[in-house]
Amino acid sequence: MRVLLVGAGGVGTAITRIAARRDFFDHMVVADYDVSRAEAAVAALGDAADRFSACRVDASDEAAVTALLTERQCDVVVNATDPRFVMPLFRAALAAGTHYLDMAMSLSRPHPDDPYRECGVKLGDEQFEQAQEWVKSGRLALVGMGVEPGLSDVFARYAAEELFDEIEEIGIRDGANLTVEGYDFAPSFNIWTTIEECLNPPVVYEAQRGWFTTEPFSEPEVFDFPEGIGPVECVNVEHEEVLLIPRWVDTRRVTFKYGLGDDFIGKLKTLHALGLDSTTPVTVHSDAGPVRVSRRDVVAACLPDPATLGERMSGKTCAGTWVRGIKDGQPREVYLYHVVDNQWSMREYGSQAVVWQTAINPVVALELLATGVWSETGIVGPEGLPPRPFLDLLTAYGSPWAMRDGG
Image (cartoon, rainbow, N blue to C red; front, top):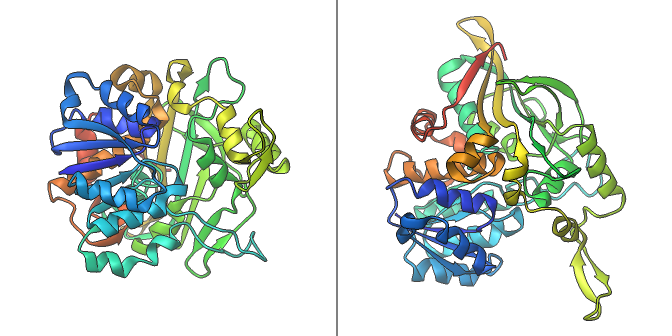
């Protein structure tokens, strides 16, 4: 297998470090708009770098990505960029006749008249519109294959296959006790994506109603996270699992709730009140004259790069799937989860916990595709494929998952 990895930020760099320890692929091309980032990611691999190469590509340039896939004879493109670049990379893979894998899906657009009750364009809608073209191509577009979405969806399918006869509700619950020394506000993941998820109307699924939206940060609940993280207040956030899981798993309700905390929510609300969450460009005067910039990009530029925070970070992050239903005629509740300690991920891989936890899952998926254990065509979410091989291989990578009975 020959892989084109687009994006050499925190997650992309962690992908190279994890993949370098496995032998399922022949070569990985690491491409980024800033070629120095791609070169740095490859150089950091030391003796393992001979199976990697670096180059420059603009992820928004569909033709350039298509040409690069063809020129380098790649079998699959892995999208490690932010969601703005999903569609050009997705279309480039289809045009080049390769497989495609991403960790976040095409962007949503709120309903123009009733955004907090009705869905507008949902996450992934633009991709699923091309489902028949992907089936005809005989190639696989594996969408939402990070940790959340990704591993969380695998957990949902596993619960449906092996743990429950009937599922009432599936709730993704994400929490952490991570702190970053020296910063009052230092998000551990891409702020552009964080703003998008947290300030868009969150989507909820109910079998009798379908998909609908609520106000941001709705339905607060305190969830007790395992392995010393403890109770964290979680709120509804827009996320792909709610759009993916009901397509393949029979359940009456699906939610995604994120443990943000009052301080983080307050800062996001302030950004929104000031219009700094907007992606609409504004004119800013500079020494070089007027320039057009996105307000959200300015916020991102003012905050530290999450990939550089590992040395200052401490604590654990937990991604998991809570499931409630019936087994053998009796009520059952479980929480399937995956915890990463930042001290461990920094020591073992030099990557902070949140980006490493995101990165390991697409690498596991690539190995399953390369070995033929996962084989499918069309546009498929993680819950559309057999879960047990994925969970077994994740454990074999040295990063086991766990289950808590009782939720």
